[in-house]
Amino acid sequence: MNELAGKIISGDIRSIARGITVIENDDAGSALLLKELYRHTGQAYLIGITGPPGGGKSTLVDKLIKLYRGQKKKVGVLAVDPSSPFSGGAILGDRVRMQQHATDGGVFIRSMGSRGHLGGLALSTSDAAKILDAAGYDIIIFETVGIGQSEVEVAGRVDTTVLVTVPGLGDDVQVLKAGTMEIADIFAVNKADREGVERCVIELGQLLSIKEMDQSTFLPPILQLVAKDNIGVAELASAVGKHREYLMADNRLDQKRKARLKSEVHNIIINRLDKWARARLTREMEAGEDLEGLYQKRTDPYTVAERFIKELQI
Image (cartoon, rainbow, N blue to C red; front, side, top):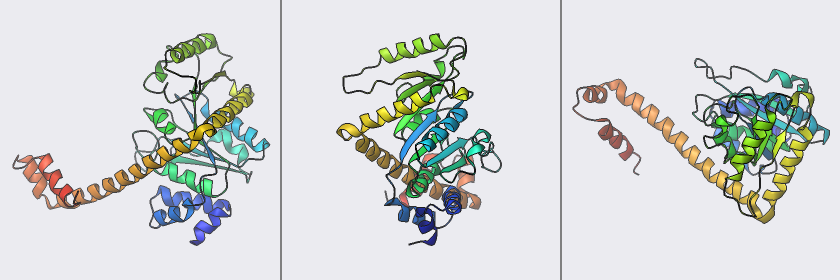
């Protein structure tokens, strides 16, 4: 076995950090590392914490870490930040509010840049979760930046999705209407000590009431929290546990994870094809012939693209 893989499986913190760096940078050997770790994955439970900016997600994650550590569970956090347009790295760095856990060997926190990925989640984030899973972490929390479609995308990468919102956003649920209502397993109305929390909860309830559900469908609970004061956090963890029990019944969790694996294979293929296309296009265009032909209308983008695709024999 690869030495790095062996150290990751043993739970060595520095090796875990190094492994994530390897896959985040797509260094040589990253695929081999993940291949060796894969059979050691599948034990961790993945939770997504998502929602609009300013909802207090980092504070909530900090409180959840403390709660799960009190249950003797190892906790990993992958916090996806906006990427620097210049370096591609995470702008915010590791979440300042979580630094009280920095000396706890049972907690691993890593900020990852979104790398311009439209959904807000870097393709390497799922691979980073595999590393933490193989290293023996019981709970892995994805915290997304909450911009664009990241709320929708995170649902496809985790077992339970917690959608965090706060009262006082004008139309309190407007930010939840673009497909996000369908992906939430739990609604957490944070900062519930603010004015307007009742209206926010009622609106969420009304939107849920029009969803088509049968008796076997999990009804997403709407919880009120004040995360900074640790109010409602235990109830949220309990709701996550109940959703996990629901998924464990009738093989729902297995089915969800199988769908996730299918999506991951698809993403790997798309990522590899994208890298090939960029390299091939750069090499071809540097010669200038295709580019000049396109500009002079002697050919067209579809014809050029079709010629490249023929090289793949598909």
